[in-house]
Amino acid sequence: MHEFLEQFIVWLAIERGLSTNYQLSTRRSLETFCDWLRQHAEVTSLAAVEPSHITEFLAWRKRSGLASASIKLEAVALRIFFRFLLARNLLPKNPAENLPLPRIESYLPETLNALEVERLLESVQLTDPRGLRDRAMLELLYASGLRVSELCNVRLENLNLDEGMIRVTGKGNKTRLVPVGGKACEALHRYLETERPTLVSPRSGAEVFLSVRGRKLTPQRIWQLLKQYAARAGLDTNVYPHLLRHSFATHLLGGGADLRIIQELLGHANISTTQIYTHVDRTHLKKAHKKFHPRG
Image (cartoon, rainbow, N blue to C red; front, side, top):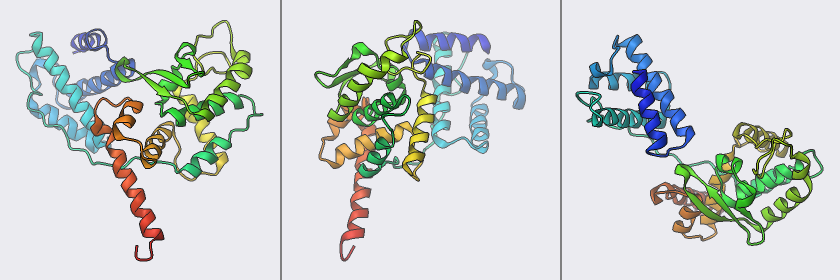
C-alpha cells in the first residue's frame, strides 16, 4: 500500500503539477483509508479492496463527524488513486469505478458589510509594532480578494504599485493579474518604504510580508493577527482571511460588477464557483427589502 501511495503522490506532483497542500491533503486521506482497511476490514492489499470497503469507509468518516464537503474530497481522491493504479496495471480492477460522489449541502458564504470591513481595517493602529505591515496586509486581502496562501507568497517583483496591479499565483500554479485599490497602494507604499526594511534579515526572501525574524508570514500567523484585530474592532462575526475574499466578491457584485470579471479577479476556473455570490447578493437585497419596505 505504501509503495503504491508514494508512486501516486509523485505522479500528482510531477505529472499533474498539483500544489504541495493538495498533495499533503490527498496523502492524509489515502493513509487514513489504508489504516482503516487494515484495522476495520482486515485488508492488507489494495488488490483485495471491494467497492463495499470504500462505501463503508466513507460512511465511517461521516459517523466520525467529517463534513460532507470533506467526504466528497476523499471520495474524489480515492477515485483518482484507483484509476491511476489500474492504468498502470498495478491492480486487476478498479473498485472505485462506480463510486458515487456524496451530495453536499449548498451554503452561502459569510461576509462582512462595508462598515464592518472599515472597522476591521481601522482597528490596525499604524503606530503599533508591525502596524504598517498589518494594515497593508489587510488592505490588500480586501482590495484584491486574495487567498491567504496567495498573500503569503506575494513577491516584490510581482507588485506594481505605479500601475496599481499585482500578479498572483493561485491554485494549480495559475497566475492572474489583479488590481490593487488606491487605499491598499498607499498602505503598501508606507510599509515597503518604512517598515519592511527593518524586518529584512540575511535569511529574507523577496516576499512582501515578512515576520519579525525576516521570514515570510505563514497562513497561521495571518489567521492569528486577523482574530486579534477583529476582537479589537469589536466584531461578533467569526473573522478569518477567506471572509475578506468573500466580502470582496460580494461588494463588487453589489456595486454592479459583471460576474465574469469577478470570476477572473478571484481566479475561479469555473464560473459556477463564482455564481454563489449572486445568491448572497439576492439574500442581502431581500433582507434590506424586508427591513425597510412598509410592506416587507
